[in-house]
Image 1 (tube, rainbow, N blue to C red):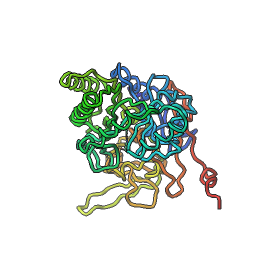
Image 2 (image 1 turned 45 degrees about the vertical axis):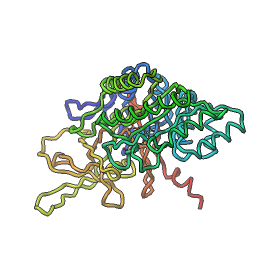
Image 3 (image 1 turned 90 degrees about the vertical axis):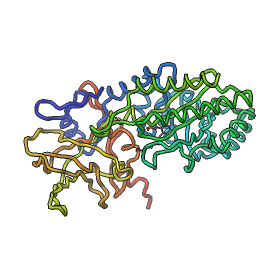
Image 4 (image 1 turned 60 degrees about the horizontal axis):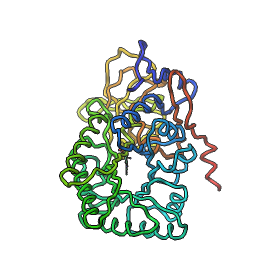
Length: 430
Ligand code: LLP
C-alpha cells in the first residue's frame, strides 16, 4: 500500500509530494512518513484479525499524530514507558485501550497507570505484583493485569530482540512454574482483575513455528489455570514481532496469512484442550510503521576506497547516520537506498552509505549499488526506516534529531519538528 514511487525524471514522490520539494522546505536529514501507507497497514491488521484486538506497539514509533491515527483506525495501543503513556494520553487516546509493558515499572509508574485507568498492565515479576497489591490496597482502585510469560522458545532473530528463551530479563517462566505461581497470587488479590496471559517471543520474525510453539504452551497454561484454580481468564495476547522486508531478499509478513495461521493454531489447541477460546490480541509495531517511513539524507563527501583484493568501495557520507538509524550498527540490519531527486545512467558502483559520526561503525546502508556519478548535494532515500529508527534516535555527537514529516494526498505536515541547538542547550544547565 506504499504510495512511494519514482516519476519519469527519477524523482521520488511520497504521498503525492516530491521528496525534493520536501527537502527544499524542511532540509535533511528527515524522516518522511506516508500517512496512507501507515493507516492502510493498521487497517490491514485490524481487518485480518477481526474479532481479535490489535495493539499497535508504540515503541516502534510514537508521536501524537500517530496515536490519533491508531485510534481513528480502531486499534488499541501498547506503551512501555511513562513517556509513551504521556504522549498517548495527550493525543486523547482512551486509557482503557492502552496496554502497559515493562520489566521494571516503578511504583510511581504503576500508581499512575492505575490512576489513569490503563486497560491492562502487563505484569513482569513477583515484585511488581507486590507493588500493585500495595497500590490497589492504598487507593481502593482496581488494576487490570496480564501476566507476561516466557514460553521457552528460541525465536529465529537477532539475539538482542529474542525474548522467549529462558535466559533473558522478560517474563515469568512457564517451565519453572513461576508463571503459574504469579497467576495464583494475582487471582487471589482483591484489587486486581486478572485478564490473562501474555507472550511476546521476539521481533523481526518470519517463521510462524515460533508463534505456534508459544501459543501451544501459553494455552496449556491457560487451561491448567482453569482446571486447577477454577479461574477462566478472559483474554490472551500473543505479542508482536512480525517481520518486514528491509531489502528485496526478505519476504514481508502478510497480516491475512498470519491471521489465518494463528487463528488455526489457537482453534486447534483450544479444541484439543477442551477449552473456550479466550479473547485474543496481538501487538504489531514494526509491521505497521516500518515500511511507512523513509529517511532522506543529503550526500556530502564521496570517497572511493581500494580494498585488499583491488576492488573499490565507494564511501558515500550523508548528513545523518547512527544517531537517526542505529539499527545497522546495533543489529547488523540490512537496508537499501536509492537516489531520491534524479535518475542516472551512470554505471553502478559498490557503495556504502555512512554517517557523519565519529566512529567507523557508523554505517547506514552496508552494501548498495549506486550510480558512479553520485556526488555532493545528491539526495538519498533509505526506505523502511519507520520502526525503531526515530524512536531509538540519539543526540550522539550532539546531533539534532531529524523531523518526521507526514505526507498525504500531496500535502506535507511536520508532525515532529527538527531539534534545534536551543533544545540541546536547554538541558545543559551549566
Ligand atoms: N510487544 C512487546 C511486548 C514487545 O516487546 C515488542 C517489541 C512488540 C510487541 C512489538 O514488536 P514488533 O512487532 O515491532 O516487532 N529495537 C529492535 C526491536 C525491539 C523490539 C522490542 N519489543 C529493532 O530495532 O529491531
